[in-house]
Length: 186
Image 1 (cartoon, rainbow, N blue to C red):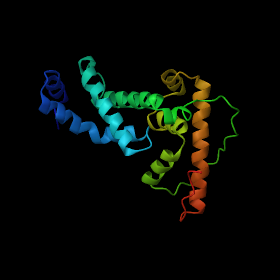
Image 2 (cartoon, rainbow, N blue to C red):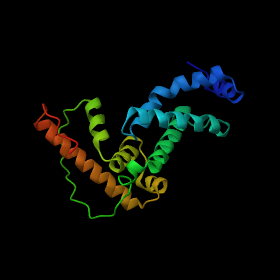
Image 3 (tube, rainbow, N blue to C red):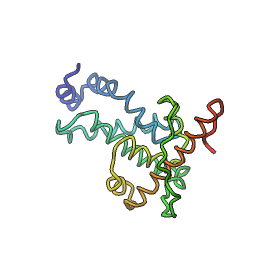
Image 4 (cartoon, helix red, strand yellow):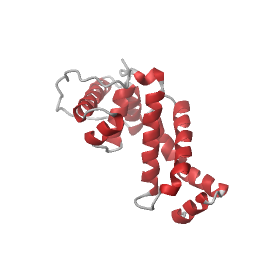
């Protein structure tokens, strides 16, 4: 187990071995976080690198309050969101419209998916839905927090999340009835 306080102090002193140790300790799990907000591993790696630049720049502001991994995760999520906002190919997907919402089914399909399959279904969502689902269901942000992060209303956040959830439910239902076919994504 590494002494995180000492590791951070060493990083702040410019110790490259400590910086590499910090990167190595969190890079794999943070790549997973970044991958949830992108459509390719190469893009996720770009977000990860940009995120770690921000981590090292922001390290003097870390006050040892809360878990270091949670602090780094927040930076990675924000970096991923900013990356999405800058990418032209995702701009349309990230425009949150306040259209009427289709009725939400309260039926929870029996999920016969492995975690990896469910993660792949989430990745098939349009970027806006994928982002909203990840922020609320995976990262645990409230709709008020998401609204502030993305500059949208709480109700828009809630409706986009429900749309993403409904689309996933329909894909899961199809998957459960036709497990041999790839039935999601269109």
